[in-house]
Image (cartoon, rainbow, N blue to C red; front, side, top):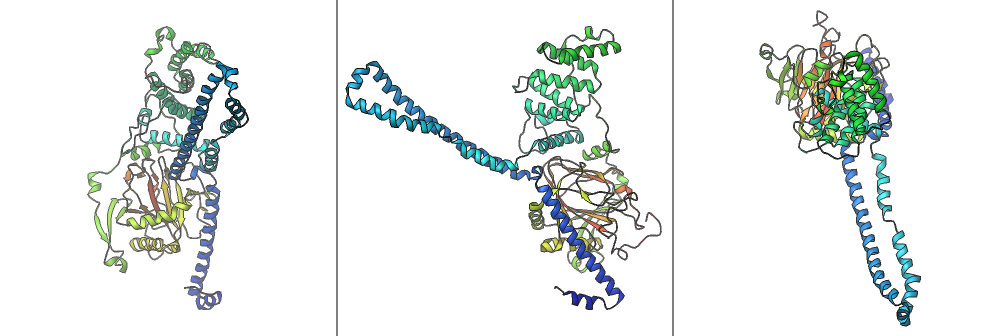
Length: 562
């Protein structure tokens, strides 16, 4: 039902309580307008970047280009066959005419046909040769090129593989040979693929990964695999990367091998002399003891320690993603139960209560079974797909949505009035949690492809970032409700490094936890992460529920940590 401004003014301003509702209603309208404008702005700006074109679309685009290429090849083959027929026919004629030119031309028909051929038929042949059947293919590929990934996109894909390599403790050979858990299709990396991976890392001054991938390229080349990259180039990158990792001895061995292959290499001779001078200061007579480069030990995962980065709980986080270090004890498991949740006798849940399982006892994390039907999941994905853009996070200082390197996914925001399914899902969240969603953020749909992740983070704003949600005017994020809309073949868990919990995606289920204590203080234990997807695609949708409106639904406790 819609109301005019006059009806609103006269109906809602009857008393101070109604006036407060009226004010909140207007603020909500302005907030929805702002969210819509902001989402459109972000969608428009991100859509222009080719990296965020859906990968499935690229598959079909490539199929069209291949079909166009095959048509071009067929046209070229038809043209070449026609030219060959001309050549064969003319070869027979010229052989006869040149053996006895005067006798050949004595026949008036031969004289006529010679004139005709030179005047007409050779012109036709010239036109045939000049005809370029590549125009259709060039036109087709030019149209699709706007959707092709660029150099930055290729770099991002390479970094995703390295991220998976680190998180799941996989060596380069596992990727190169396609030895991944849960895969349905074989995929292999060639010497040139491994070489390009190593170059990407090298150009980023990531010598740790450069060593791993250049070593794999060298290993495959030594095994007899052919490649465009030369062994000298591989050794050049590998030896310097090894030197940067502080391994002078192996860098010297590799450089010697490079010099033996290419004595005139521009840098190898100078590098070798430099390495040997440094090495001589550390180890006596190492050159004499390490003369045979064939005896060098191959570099494996773990040969060098991965440099530490900005994330303090990196090792714990990645171990949990692998299913290691989970702090689920028999005593804790004995405190976990399952139950039927009717939302405190909510009428919509009385006949069909929600199945609820405890995932963790403290902080309390629950999973709801059959939270979404397959039909609802498909409708949500259908609504979200056209507007998927690079996922954003709120800048803690400004409160503005922005992209971040630690969150790699695509997301879209859906309003309740867009479709009855979204409205129904929102109502279900309110019914089962007992919290109002009137002040919650819109339903966010996210898709994590291979390598997609969200590194450890807090959903709520901390004391040092008071303006994170100021523009919303709805307080802090009191709770998180997360729908899993797909199964994942490998990877993609939700982990809590602080207390060692792992929540694995299960299609159609949802998990729920509080980010704030009843006092409004943040529960810092709820710092969590979305692990990189190793194989498959992960779809989720989440609802961030805010403080405003929960005053009587979740009253304050007696202590700061109730």
